[in-house]
Length: 486
View 1 (cartoon, rainbow, N blue to C red):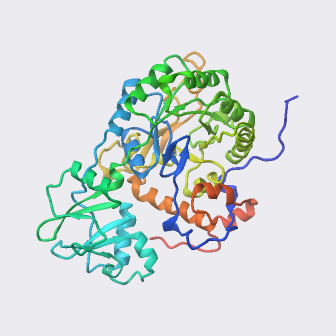
View 2: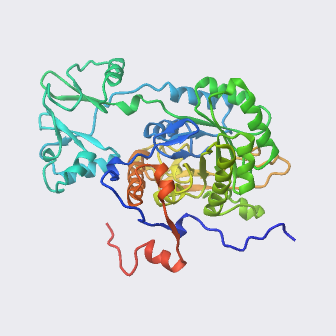
View 3: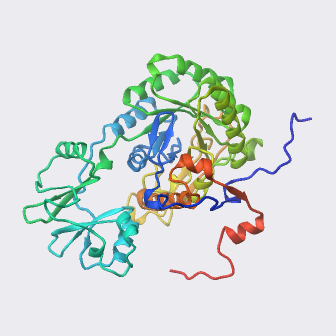
């Protein structure tokens, strides 16, 4: 007979609802909530990782997600030189001016400007007159705080620009260099710099977030050669090493972590162990010395491990079990180990429920939808294209698929190989920034409902409730109506 039979049905994110069970204070509004997460010394501005999948994370994803404050994790399937090369390129990426910024005219309504912001994923937009003279800056935060109507003019809520007395950082030197801008940002707390000419006309913009360090992770296997891969990536400036194995509850992962932690050359770069989905698996990696532990098995959109060999676990069951291990480990050692959920979180709502326990979420399917994903892009007829206006689908494939054949991740070989993932395509959503910004606001809104100003408070205060299938249909979606087609 089996050692243990668990009769309680396992659950996933969509089966839970977050309750507004804590008082939302005046300091807990969307514009004041911070989503920064501390992962063993890595301070990521947002708690999102892109998965170490060949169809998802390459240079474009690392750069775009990194500029938003997340962490792209480069796949172990990449040759060492290419993986470390992307790390080096991303870490040395220079800030660029926004030479042709999206603008708002003084004759436009707030509604029109908000639509522009949502379309492009911005939170700040310069306001100009018909001659392109710079008049001020519209910011979402100021608009939210002032509570003006959408049909009022944008000038009624903009931060007005007046030379000498303006809150807005500016320069009248159109030939300003990137180096000079960096010095300006270092010397003050301005979030952006407006460059105008001698007539006061808008020339270009620079944003402080574009000079901040981009965080990058690199995946490794437990097989021969991992030390060389680690060394190359650390030399290139990588922030995090991630063990990429389907089942991390094994001696190979434990021994690797112990060897890694004892090597002074790797000191200062945390290592993430995984993947595990049980109390004992999480405890094993923590006791081996993992700085971070990654959870998840067979819940990814392209993963078929459960179908093929009956192995895997539903997300919330795994998260709760592994969190109990973390609590026990913390009590025993005094060391807090961040948990990263990996697989099956495909929307802002999923991220929110996962973050009631996890410190961060890794996503593959979610990020695979975007222009920045590494997979090939196809038009509506299934023809590969590089024309952004014609893109309709993005190629996706699991690391255990026939195409990837990532033997090392699944402890297989050419002789024993069987697929544990599929290959297909996913709907194209466009550029990452606009949709990601919307989803980040949804996460902030949820924290506000839970009376939490940050993720640490959220994990302490959050109350979630398991819903019945019937209540999921009532609470979780629209009902008894027909939608208009726009």
